[in-house]
Length: 306
Image (cartoon, rainbow, N blue to C red):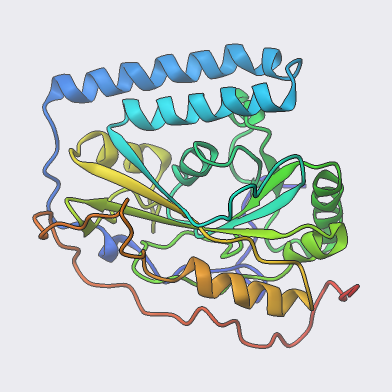
């Protein structure tokens, strides 16, 4: 099968966000700061590659601590400050599997989620099969290939039954962060099949209290474009809001709609969240606002089991 992206179609999500959502001005940073961040990122990647074979031999909790530490180190060397708002009840988690569903802005989202909830990630097949992705246990999925969707959902359900945490980005594509898209329901079927809850997570990138779109992976961006913008910024923060788990009850479209309303909600005024007067650079214009409530599909490739 070809490694090229699947042709656009009714089952391949398309983002309304593009280069127009990116900032007009790039304040940048001094060359020495860029160089130090690049060297720091290289060191973290080397440690991740070397630690990959070792983490397989460790216990789950120890392995998760390693993943969490590597993810936080990667964010730190890029100059990103991590804020966590946790609304889970006391005692949530444990050894029970959970399906993490998060909004998608950038490939940096993997590090942001892993810094709080270490998990096996479902990512698009077009990503290169690097040693770093294997270290974090990334599961590659071909978007738009309906004949392979059932096998991917079943594989996810098997991991959840074994008590593993699996993270998905159900929007299926990246957005700038100003609006959330609909959550495609396919992978929510894995939570229903395994009988485990869904853990909604909201990601927001901001700078001095103002929404920052520079970390986005949008339009014709390559991996280097996003990295260059992030390395050239100061005061960038990623806020990870962990909502209360949603029980896997009912039909997968209803479950996806409930999670979409949480994922797309604005960040609460929590003690961890302290917005300041906007001093950053504005975007060129906002992306089209989209509803988080998914419309009824014309046909479903995955019949509901519950």
